Image 1 (cartoon, rainbow, N blue to C red):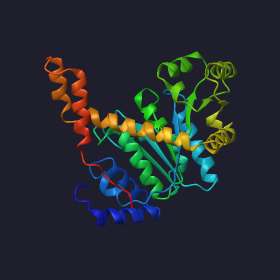
Image 2: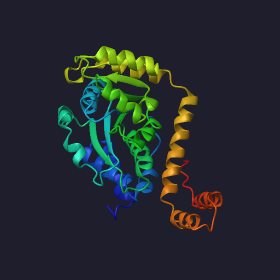
Image 3: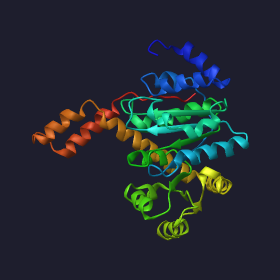
Length: 303
């Protein structure tokens, strides 16, 4: 990819818009790398819906996403799935290896399934996912489903780009407690109790509603039961979106990306060493770090 110039990228964009999943995959690799700006500068802004899906491991996120993809494909939308694994250094690796339930869509050229492994990539999750979403919108995908592992900071960052964020839980106290500890209930717009044919599902739904006040849906994703109700809840939430909520999401994205860049700023270690040695106070160090970040050239994509 190191010799990919604007002409090569333009050809990839044309091929991806024409339905080449392989070209779309190559472009996604580019926006996860140092070539990100070369791709983004060639894209015209395009509207794209983003739905975040998260929950504890084993909650049934992949199964839920598979039936959501089917539901939205039936409505005529081109759909992309971004499965985010902040810990894996390999894009398209182990996470996709577990996507057996997505196999029903594997031969559909209007469905793209991609593992986004952000460790070691430029800017990490906070930068990689918005860039991928911008790319997918420009390529003609009308809906992006973003799946995260449900165990940490990634959920906060996904909530900044998604409308809504859907949290999938299983019946019983364990998942709800784990979700609360992981901060998932704080980012949830819609809560779903999956595997609702199990004992305790109704009680879990009641308890979650009392605790959060959020809409609680029940689902048996493996059988497709409750999927239409979930899609309608997602659409209702989207129709209620406002400019103020959109601005709040954008604000969270900016702050998340700024924090990500500050963490990798070349002056951070020297400033930290100076504070630890007592040569600088932490307030001055913070001002110097921000001043150093301010001096970096901004990228203007206004066209």
